[in-house]
Length: 607
Image 1 (cartoon, rainbow, N blue to C red):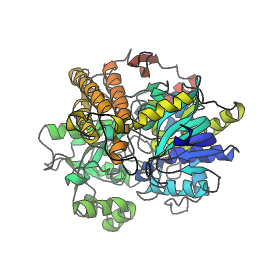
Image 2: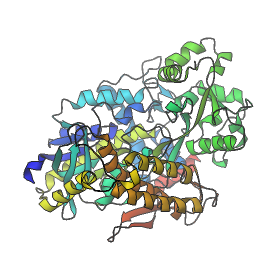
Image 3: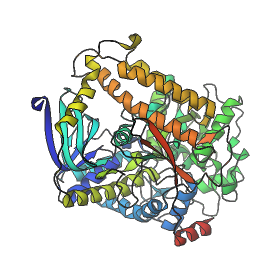
Image 4: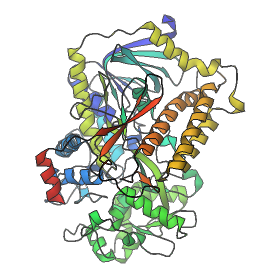
């Protein structure tokens, strides 16, 4: 067996090279430990580059009334108070320093007239808070982190997929995987592991997520014994492209609405004025004029309804479509061109503020957004749930295993505010890297049982060695059927009966996935890659469905048609899943720790 795989030795192994992974690797390397960085794609292709709107941080450059206290209260309110309040506090306090740090490392942010970092309005944020680079903020973040990180002595392993975490007793000891180009097997030995693998969007048919988002980190942690939390909370971004079909699901940034874009039904009416949640009454504009003044930075105006939280906007769009008031291709209209009535230089302003959106619609849909509205609809975008971690250190319930970014749970509660994802990557990527390095320095060398590696290799190579070929169906068909099941039965609006049907379908698909065979050899074999990813997709899909069944209420991004209201008593808890001794998924409720008195006072004050 020794000749069949290559071994790599690192103190800290970081899995994922997006914003969280790069920031964790930089921090760990700065501590003086040896760091390995494994990424599924090429360096620079992480899904973070698709983040457009900006980085939420209370710099108070545009509105001096902003502060970490307001940011904290906004985050808690958006998360329906299911957030880990300590994580929300750390995030709000540390985000400004992480943004200034990024600037010091070379990030070229848009500027105010006096040269400070410019900030824009975004849904759920009380004041203009998003530091941005046009609508290409994620791309600039990755560029900056990579340019800084290459000088830190980090060993980068590109185009590698990890299929199992390895353990030494109860602690993590590294990971097993293969390189996607040649199919060669690799063992990564490490004293600490940081998961930064992103989300689960490819479990759904319509998603803004790229091909890498198959729930790898969630599944790796789960099968290693870690707990997953809040998996029922899947965020459906209100605005994805819906036409032509080849681009369905591609994100249309919230920055369009932040710069004055309005949502219209086929009758040309701004339907979001019809349904303002009680929590936002008094903060939301009553008319078009006041909403427009807000987007132009008028501090006396109230926000337009298009900048309410994403779960609310998405459900309102679904309502319009279901009741027959949608656009020709089954969405609604998003119009930024209307601001030409108010601003003489509107076309130039749109192209300057939203360059990627302008080119995206022009090239992919033959639409000039400076002259005509876009057709948009909800798209699976983000999962608030993930690996349950300790607030300060980001360590999971498995010793030595850390998680940060989208694959970690806690910060966002029941619903994430736009822009909080990028600051989450920076704040908790830094914390995970620092604590992983500390853990690695104070613990002894790890020992990996050869039988563990043999078992991991056997599982990875099994698709080539099976005799049968599952009813003539390859892994792609199974993946497609799973995506269709999740889209139809565990989507934006859920019911118990549909989710029970989904679980039955997931079980059947899981059995087929265990029998599926792939042909050819291990080099350049996407069928093999898909066959191995099916296990991860099945795991996260089951976790979402079981958690959603357990939460018998509607809260944040989780909406149940059979339980449309909040459960004020038992609803204030987190749903946790873990792998039981018999291999089945176990679901439990976890009470939320009482919020510290000074933070409770901030929340009450901001109401």
